[in-house]
Image 1 (cartoon, one colour):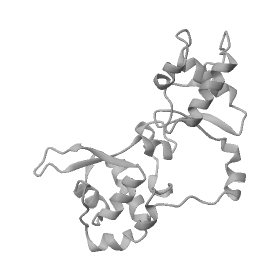
Image 2: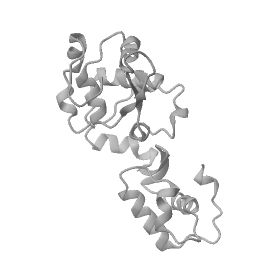
Image 3: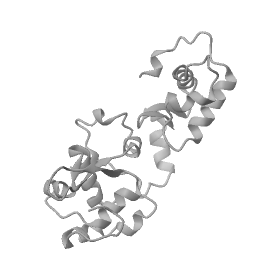
Image 4: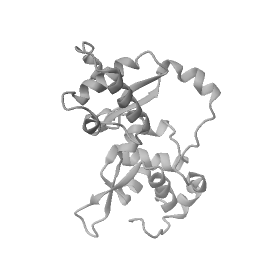
Length: 209
């Protein structure tokens, strides 16, 4: 859905409704869909129309409304990325081993642990998988109908949001391994993961193999 394709909003969305939608999108922990916005609006107002009006309203501001992770969220205007990058401290990054695993899962999902290891040519250490789980970038996605019924792994809506993707259909040609993403709440304890990879998988209670 291209919200910007509806510039002719007649009659205009009331300013109070725009303020309400703006506050909701700002406060939401995940991208907002029209269905999420619906309960806040009068019945006569189409939530997609309200989001279209909000996108137009924010078009020339420092933060703009963009499609990400299956919904809509505020992001820094692209033309301000350069000046802001010089002023803001870089986010803590996931270790290289975790990014390699994320790339393998992203491009082959749903995929088993053994299949990830075959793609990378290296063992998948539990701390590396934990780093991706902590960051909310991957999740279990059922089990493969094969001996032992191994867990299948796939990316999450948070992955789409973190990389500015609307959906997995945007993936062809997208090199996830060339990008850094913020680590999870415990990312710092995984910095030694590449050495752990050479040592082989480590057991971890509560996380599927």
